[in-house]
Image (cartoon, rainbow, N blue to C red):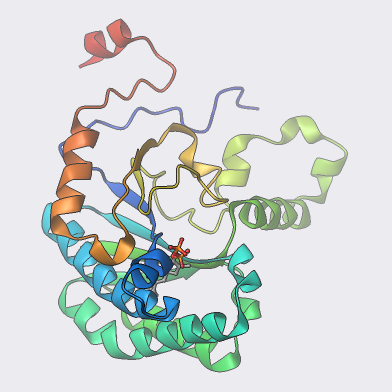
Length: 253
Ligand code: FPP
């Protein structure tokens, strides 16, 4: 058993975060401020997604993860949920070729069984079409929740290793990490939440244990290359210690 946290290697703090995870918040308020229906904010939000993908691609970010629809978002008015699903379908249909041209691999994580068959098919198709791309991996978290993720990983682990029920001491963090929906990516270096709230909201709760957390009042539809740059400047000034002392870190580098 490994008594250490699964985050046992210290990533080199580079100029640019390897993995950026974003909660895109503030679409509704952006629209309401302009006397528009909330859904108009989501439509504009898609443009901000494009800008974020381009800016991260230019800066050499390897993984960009966006929280598009949480497990809790089903509680919204039915009309808004329908619009979000349509937007998702339309965006997948329209953007895949552009993503390929930019070298972007698309992956969708979350409990996709809740989506209708057409959307599930489009998701699988878009993932397959971009599977060869390697410049940037864009992950869209859809019907995703961090607690759901830990639960599905634990279930999968127990199914594969029923002996763990008799020998729980054999269980370690790595075994769970390997079964999380985003096991293919390193843990996020930088988390960004737009829209002024300072919460994780059940996003990648396992993987954000050591991530630098950046909050901005900017509403998502207004978020663009300049705002990303501000977040990166802030990130560069952080000292990531992963439990060590400042002196230990300076000795190591
Ligand atoms: C939060 O704003 C945003 C969402 C729940 C949806 C995000 C979706 C998009 C940006 C468009 C679709 C994305 C893709 C990847 C195609 P909010 O409605 O909670 O805003 P509020 O807090 O101001 O009400």
